[in-house]
Image 1 (cartoon, rainbow, N blue to C red):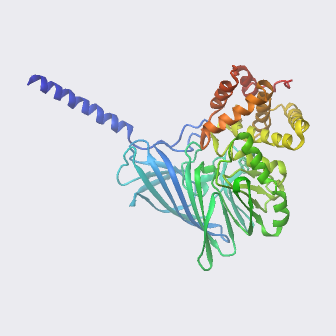
Image 2: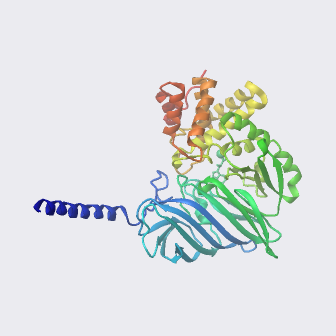
Amino acid sequence: MRKLIVIAGIAVIAGIFLSNATAQDGGQGAPGLGDPFYDRLGNGGYDTLHYMIDLSVDVNTNTISGTTTIEAEATQTLTGFNLDFAGLKISDISVNDVSADYSRDDFELIVIPATPIEEGATFVTVVTYSGIPTPYPDPSVDGFPIGWLRFGGTIFVMSEPGGAMSWFPNNNHPSDKATYTFEITVPELYVVAATGLPVDEIDNGDTRTFVSEMNDPMASYLASISVGDFVRVDETGPDGLLIRNYFPTDQAEELTDAFSPTGEMIAFFSDLFGPYPFDVYGAVVVTIPFGGALENQTLSIFGTDAVDEYTIVHELSHQWFGDSVSPATWDDIWLNEGFATYAEALWAEYLDGETGLTDYMDELYDYMVEEELGPPGLPDSSDLFNGAVYLRGGWTLHALRLKVGDEAFFEILRTYYARFQYANASTEDFIAVAEEISGEDLTGFFQMWLYDEEVPEMPE
Ligand code: TRP
Ligand code: ZN
């Protein structure tokens, strides 16, 4: 009898401890994910599964209105959670169909559902909003505004790294990928180019709704739409892959020509790295000379003055390295840009053999020395996309190839891609694959190329 009481007492005490532990695990999800460059980007306590971005765009006033619906799974008990969302006017938020409380603190949107969400539960948040999106002055791209942009009669989205929150509420960090549906309604004379597979085009009379599906996981910075006077030009890539390009109507002919090697490039990288990761590819060209391009997932975007073969090949290669394999945190950016730069050199090698490759790399080396480019593994947080990350990042791969030999090098790239596709990788993950495949201790090698201040000597 006595014993039983004691056991019951222990059970009660254990119960108290257990319920305390649960209470501690619950609460408000964290307002950031601990990114070394952006402590407030991304949010803790949940994992997004699917976004449905349903917006009407008034092109003349640059105003948007509609809803973003986010399906997510709670990774802890949540009395509340944050989204990242900058500007715009919110008229309503619901969680699981029940109106929720919310408040805003700069770009943190703090949502308090009517009832807590249990750990492991899937929940649906609908944010209804409208307004003129304000581009985000990202501290990592030298104040250059990113996100939702308008120039003349064209609207387009370029978000890397932090701009996605300028047009839809999201978990704004590459480590939380999700699938997407885009349903974008525009006046009938405009065409929408969206990331993902175009699945429907609904004629509503004086407006049209363009629907596309991103069926593979995507980081929010790679979600994009463009609205303009585009003509869609389709091609067929390797294994019947749909290549759908959107060109300004008055430049369609010359641009069709300029992008015609895309299919051959996809075949080349598929052989070299592994299968093309997505169910569609293509380019959108906007009539803005912004002097660059961005690898939005399945739909790279180019300014009219950035349409050249090596930029085309650069953005395409990002579909493997950057989009399918994404950086674990933003200080791993050389895993995107160094790889895409080296992919350009691989294309030069494909076209012109060994001299194509060495000419390309020699030129980068000279520039690297002249500019004293610093360590790509320690990028400048106020200038994330600087030359070191691109050129010395690319050279790190070339030097690795010279060190371990072609066979091991390409096996490293294929293994790294196969292991981390549709997910994220860190610099340590890449180094681990390189050491595993080559069987060499590469600590000193990567220290010198990625982390030492001085530009390493040209390898033999
Ligand atoms: N990732 C782009 C490239 O391929 C560079 C880039 C980063 C960018 N952020 C951007 C381009 C914003 C345009 C807008 O090199
Ligand atoms: Zn790039």
